[in-house]
Amino acid sequence: MEGMNDDHMHGMMMHNTSDGGMNMTNHHKMMMHMTFFWGSDAEILFSGWPGTRTGMYVLALIVVFLLAFMVEGVSHSRLMKPGSTHHVTAGLVQTLLHALRVGLAYLVMLAIMSFNGGVFLAAVAGHSLGFLLFGSRVFNKPSATVPAGKTSDLPPMSC
Image (cartoon, rainbow, N blue to C red):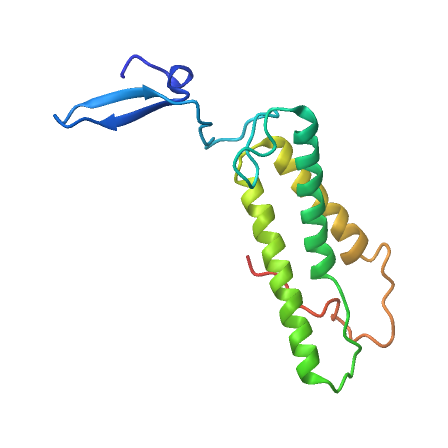
């Protein structure tokens, strides 16, 4: 074991033997990366997905981009009219939006935990474009009916 580097350990698993020793076996399972890496050979969100095909990897990057984009869209959405008297309805809508936002954000986080550089860049790009379109002042003009500082029906993310 001592003379082996990480390149030789890929796919190797250690098992305890009944006599207290160690036994190495070769498995063809993908090892989880603990540092960032580049390439299309990654598992993202689901076992075996996207596989080894480049087209499926590109599709996975697009999915991660859209998930991150949707997090920003939901985070900056305003569905409730100011001064609404339907407090129960407003509370239920806020709760559903919050659940959707948290669920999407966790999916993005789990995708990034694949430690694939392309997935990380796709998530950052999705969040950035989503913020540009939904959260920044570039495309959103403040209206007189919205209270100052109120840009969303949801409070800011506290991750």
